[in-house]
Image (cartoon, rainbow, N blue to C red; front, side, top):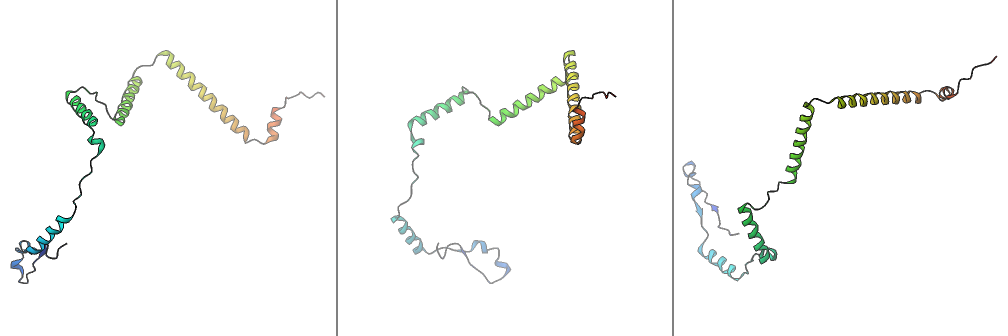
Length: 152
């Protein structure tokens, strides 16, 4: 960094010179610029390394062929995976809505009623078993014994 580079000149004259402040910059002396150029001549300037993959002729020909095929429209247009999944989901939802709007056949109605009865029966059985677990043990044992008529 040089001492004289981009240093504004400060005027103490007041408001009338504020417009000219942006234009008043001191330029570095000519001798400083010449010294800097002489120092840069002796330095080795870095160069960008060549990527062997990008420089290979096979890769370049393949890339050119792909570009040509794409321009001609010969390549299949593949969608991203996320877009395909979202389209499949929306198609599935549309199919379900259409099925829900169609009237059900007699067989479907009967199967649905039977399934509801079975579920209701299973629910009642679960409640009955839960009721048995809350009953003391001696009551459960007594209920499991066969009732023998008393002979007197």
